[in-house]
Length: 250
Image (cartoon, rainbow, N blue to C red; front, top):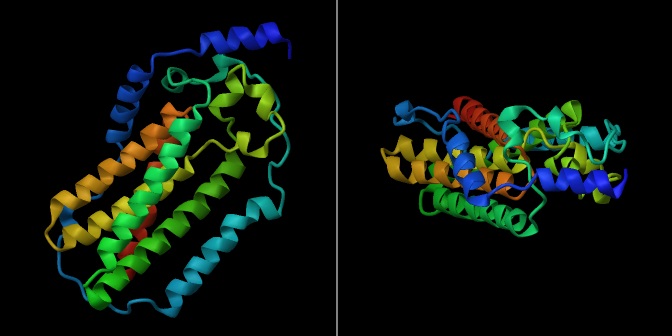
């Protein structure tokens, strides 16, 4: 692709970051959140049983299927791609890749995992260990299903619509934008933690965790790694994974 076309696309993609951040947070804030009806006493069946171990192992197998079977492993069909092909609700967020925000989103996700898992497990005996194992299981299935959808949908990442597209034209991951894995994992973590807190009647910590997950998703949009709809889809998958696992385990 000629340098002139790349320059035109890159120029068209420039937006104001404060506006992107505000709209990203607004989009993510309307993502479906679980109900506080979870605030109830439950009977713990087993802290970490064979079924949980097998479930996490199975999710690992599912996660590896797309790469093992080389599903949609080819390069993208365009670099750069036509900006007009992007839906209007995503087009506003189109921007060049920002490595700083991308790294920050990964750090924030790791911090969310560390804080929620530590708080679940500390000083609560079998109950805390059960909550922790359910959270791990939720995240593992959220990431597994996300990987399957990424391969099946093969949506181009935002960078393929900018002048930097030629630099990633041969990178398979540039076709794995929908849904966002960071958002999926973050909302699986936050929802699992929130349900555990609401079960004890503690509402604020759960909502703070959900807000932190929304922040992770917003940073992925600001970084140019994902479109807003990628993040919303990932948030829905992560939330659903946590709710399903909580329903099964408690």
